[in-house]
Length: 174
Ligand code: IMP
Ligand code: MG
Image 1 (spheres, rainbow, N blue to C red):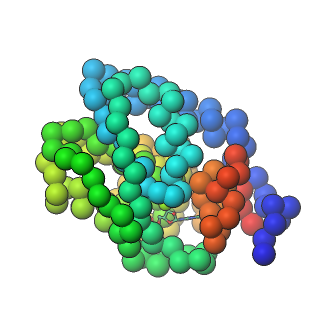
Image 2: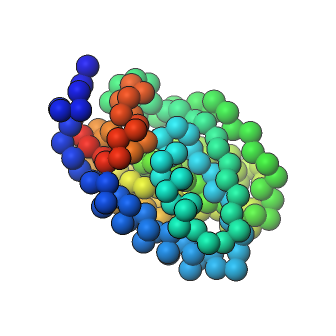
């Protein structure tokens, strides 16, 4: 069992919150005079979604879907499971998918394809707190991200190891 003492801090709470505020201001500009649907990918993106949404000023609706690609280990399987992906009618809507981290890109690609296949959205974009670019296996990049990270297994602020550490207000690594 890894304990909190084994963790090194990568992004402190105020760094994360500062970056989210900046991102929120950018989204307020980009979606000015528009309505927006945020789609939170549970469970990892829950902290990010909640904190980001508090900065947003446009008429906003939130949906939550549950996907999983990781087992309980340190590396991505590349296989995405749709645990619960029930969504309202997104035709003609501005849709922004909210993720904690984009790693191999399989999850992002699966979701973007799923939404494109089922709806004719007004716009569809992808917003990830973290971008682990160096691990990418499919050709996809987030439209918005706060931090680029290297190939470390990260925990905290929504990110888990075996279900633990999601509650940490900072992001750390072992
Ligand atoms: P992808 O499909 O490989 O892009 O993986 C995306 C998902 O893997 C994310 O939504 C996370 O849940 C998980 N993930 C990727 N990297 C990490 C990490 O460093 N720590 C914890 N979870 C991670
Ligand atoms: Mg996730």
